[in-house]
Length: 185
Image (cartoon, rainbow, N blue to C red):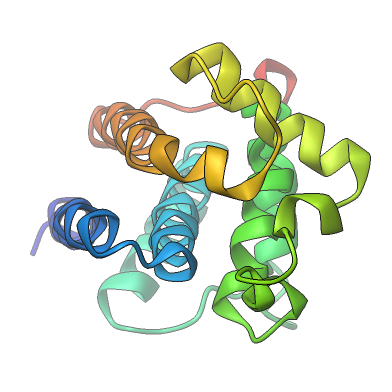
């Protein structure tokens, strides 16, 4: 079995579901789930970026673990690879990953941001996180002009499309055996 092909198929299948779900959620105006879907797509992207930074033998081990439904273990076998270390690696490459990932996590786990009908989640973020999210959205998607949560919502499908496009690009690099040296990040 070609584990890279199976892994790629898994990731693309998940991504396809995310795109369909985002369309439905945007029409139904369910903001918390739109952001949760975006966070899940970002999870796929940071995992693929992490794989690209691993030496070939290590990469193979991690891909095999994914295909078998196992957690990724540290090189020494003690503990698992954490989301934090994968996100921090992707942050070096993307520059906005940490803020968007953290914002998305707040919608996956019950948090104060779920009170978005009465308190604006964007105003509850640190200035740094809010500005990182808005700067990314403005740079790549042309808006929003204001920093309020309702103003951000129409851009979420575009953000998902951008993350999905990046994910597909990185999957192509993974299939080609590309290696992202830490100095290149």
